Length: 639
Image (cartoon, rainbow, N blue to C red; front, side):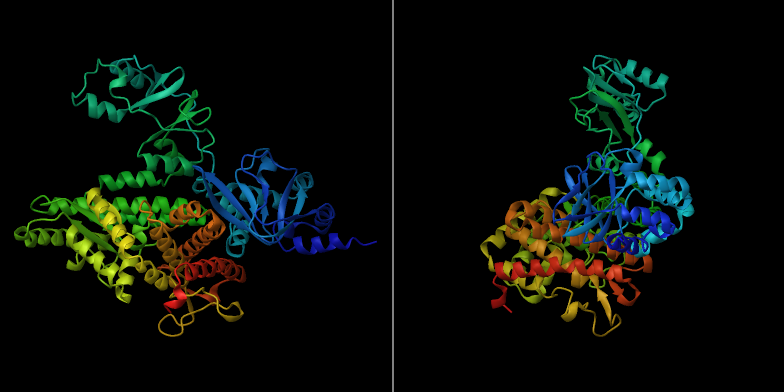
């Protein structure tokens, strides 16, 4: 009697790698031993750090999300759908799972015994190469049609370029850190560092790390004569140290170093300062491992002497972005890195411009990034959006003060233009007198926009409310924020107008689930992913954050995370919006890199069926969040 179930499994698997390179006998053996598993929505198949199952999995129907825990944050790394394999690496390498796998919808999986696969590997070199490619990339690629299939078809090319695929491998570190006690003198510590030929020494107490001294400390604090070399190391050590687990990945290490502005991480048994020191990881270790490292770019920016050097570094950052996208690194990590580099370039442009001015600034000021840079979501090189705020001055000093800051702003925007950030066509830049204002003027402007919410005023709010201080006096910006929230609280109907604006672009699908495209103009029949997909999510996150008086974060992903905490009854909706935003942001970035443009307008004819389906899967959260806004802010009455 025929095994019809096995035949159906056979017919399915033969269309996907590596099963498509098996002979009939091998594939039939696998098909007859498959276990069919039904997984309910939001159910885990396995969790990070869990010991591996005896089977790996192929998605028959549905979708499985792969999540990576980074600094207590569950980051969606990938979505596996029809034909995708997951959970294979730990079985072959006899290691725990590096990610969690959870059903994003009801799913049917084929569970395949790794023992059968191992038998086939021994006699099929092509399957063996498939595994090598899989483990080298270490992350599944969501867009299987364009990425995964292509990847596995070019294993030799991949293997020759493995040096770039490092961000999610466990980072290497020195297992023999040089140490001393806090009673050691600085001179003794320096001699130890010299004899060991190392650039740092850790201070320990009961085997636990309590401080660190680097070459930089010796240069700045000892060589300058500020502190005697005969003092104890405790006088100049940096404390407390930043400690991490030995399982930290290169990506996590980079984020930690950037976040804390340090060059060394202490490795302890459990990742906390309260357990025994087992190693040290330096910025140099990551540079050696990865080559093109964001920390290196940050250092180059700080050392830059002219704008042409900044342009060169910005081009290297674009190359880094492309590399990260190709490696399928999580978009949250990419955004953090690229935003830090962009901000550092802006700071250097400001510093170079200040050096060109005849005098120092007459009063304190702040340089604000607006729009996507302000939200830390600017991955591709787009036009500038910035503003400047300066401290209030006496009426007789106003004209001279404003002229100073307009000249400074012109120098800064010129440098940013040379670097690659084009001038804003609408002149939303600090070099425009309208956006180079004193604190009092900014407050008056915000008050007008909020209390007289015309269509133009609301549009301005969506741009200027997403500001981020890049350089200058934080207190000025704090006062601006406090004024904005105070004014909104006294004129709450403003939020209704902001909500109405958030519904200008409806969910991107029309009748029969067709994409809503541009009807005319230069981009006729193209899909505007910015206006129709990203902006509705950005606008919704901003509006709800404002209604909660949430001042501390303007990044869309961070906003959705925060409001998910504040509104647990809507948590699933907000997290689905968060995931959709990540996917859409990555998709736009990929399209921009591919076509060397902003990635905003997409020719649907050039997309595969798989890509279209993945885009459409992001549109339901947009409709759902807009429905919520419509009800919450009574927007039907305002239409």
